[in-house]
Image (cartoon, rainbow, N blue to C red):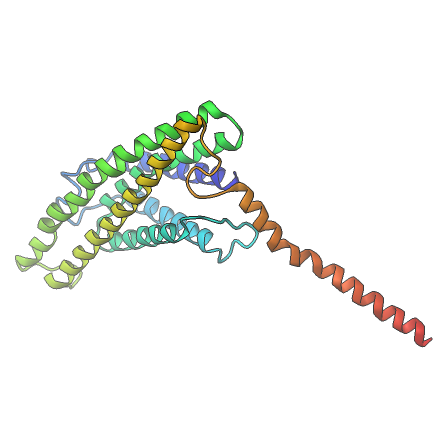
Length: 270
């Protein structure tokens, strides 16, 4: 439940900030303008927003891999897929910043926010045993997933990056122009990599979409969203925390026993 609360607060704040900073730009959710007049003069506040969001995804990857969050660990059935997703997202953010594709990156992030917020809200209602609300939000989450990630994402971002991105970037280089001192071959490879990583995200969307469909069928049969909507389990989290803290709790006891034995030996000598 703590994870769901944190994600709702963090993603909700970033989504609101994104609407405030990027929502008024002409390129916002407009595939015709993502790559026109490249490189675009993106406002500094949008760049700061992008860096804040990069920090959030970096923290999310750390949370999955348990590098620094030793006090709270989560078991996941799809941990490998989640790590791949987070790494892909971070690489895309880095390359889009370097390529001046921030316009695309911001829109991709905010598109994903919609489904994420609905999912985490559904989880909160599951944990608080609000069955009707959990079913409503889970249904909205599933619907948004297929509309936005199976429909809008490949057309607005992947198709646009493949066609218009090539024309705006590599096409300019072929005309003899250069950018940041790099030639056409370099920017062609960067463009190919960018499209490939966008494609990896689409494959993950399809994979999770199939799992979501299975969960929808399960929910319709059971009449209620199960506790682990996608992959995590609150009970498993608590069990793992207990296992992790047990050695810490036993150390003082062992030390106390050792001290008692030493005192007993001293008394015997006396």
